[in-house]
Length: 332
Image (cartoon, rainbow, N blue to C red; front, side):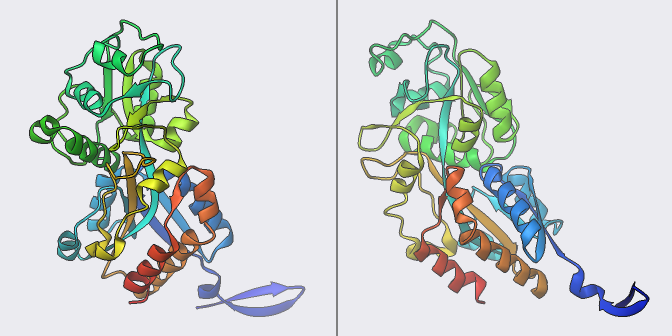
């Protein structure tokens, strides 16, 4: 299609197709939303395409991709290779990050509270109900714990962050595995619900004596106290980019069909125990031009976008994994 443009009395023909910017729409996980929002803004300003991303939760994002109302979905609850084939989708890892346990205990600063594995599970099972419980006090000598009711805050929506957290609880507690299990949406034994990661943070910030779980960047931005969590080796680990990276050190991506990988409760003295991978899903039947536009964008995220990811406390995918994604997904 040609349009005419008149400048100083001279007429030029220009192609509208050359000036139109491709629009890529995505939706899904709130876990990586802070960096996705940074990426989409920067790329839309400087790149050949405009990218939109709605933080609606992993489950809702995957459902929108199934309905073909978005071009890609973000999820922290990975699909198995079999489910990818069934749904006509392809999956690849985008980032690593940490799920942290946040508390509202006046006078208790971040990383001061230590929670053993069994204690954490029993709090979310509703078996430990007060902050002055002897089992909590055992690992926190010298820390003044109030005689305050524990209020559990958990997700109300279908959530990849919940999948990561409940997957971890299932690994450290047989009772949790039997009674509740792991999933994006489970029947929580106790607690009040919050929508997406910001909803969890808002409720914890408002409720004295509360405890919840969220992606690390949200906790930092909300200035909420994080607990040190006992890892597989028995050490109490604080959340940061280095401990998230340590959890992924032994990940065998070449043995993960469809890039399905769960990094909770990993070995290693410095490993953060609740580390997660956040994924991108695209449809196999995507329009070829749209598919190429998305590949261009995700390549930019892996390379140029890595700096922004690190600044926001995420771990970019290692170069060897990026090369695997390029070979198995991008170069088809």
